[in-house]
Figure 1: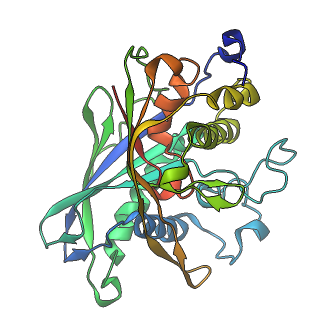
Figure 2: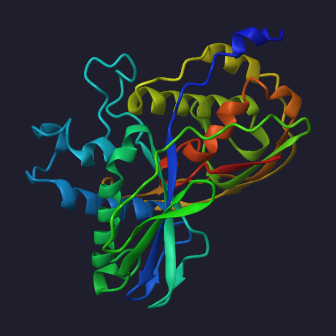
Length: 324
């Protein structure tokens, strides 16, 4: 493949404000969570948010007069704006949040502290108070195994925001004082190699086939991430990302992975909507990229550490870290 002219790849990265929040909780009763709790947290958040904000009690949100102004459908069903140029064939746009469960929080004894992280993207940061209140109320009803028997209850004690460290922006009963969200600062591209650590399952499909450890290519990883960033920007900010996406994906073809240490991690979750167990396995592990070849892709890769990549990103799947 002929190299793509570098000038074609240097369109500026427009703003995609993101913010990560850390919710500190204390267990009232024993809390028992599954090995990967992203789906559990998403379900608890969704049910509590709907109970918190719904004023019509309609069964189906699209039939409601408030469909395009209510917080719940914006967050959990995310209808594309009317006359949208993108996603005409799809019923919903990407959701503007990511849940990041804390690791090693499966068995929490009464009185013990635990928590969950939450990333809000673009305009969703204006709904932070609703997220906090919904997760507070979720604790009153219980979460995880045994919630129907009175277990899984917790209280929300404080919230921190990631900003040059972690800053407390809310304590129970106090005022919420968040800092303005910003597009993360992009550090200089390192001269050496960049290690990519997949900390939660990365689930990718190419031509309807799941990408297995031996089949992962940089192009597949990057094109999936680029599409997600583009759609999040388009639907949740006033300044859509502007770049020659086709040329970027073409250029990604020649970037080679090395020193791959990847495994397939099986994971299933229960879908109440479909009343079925869904397989959500994906890739975990590490691989290395040549720093010198990443100049056109670097800002996108860095930003993706907040948005995650691949299927199930809203539940915390596809989380990765760049090690330089």
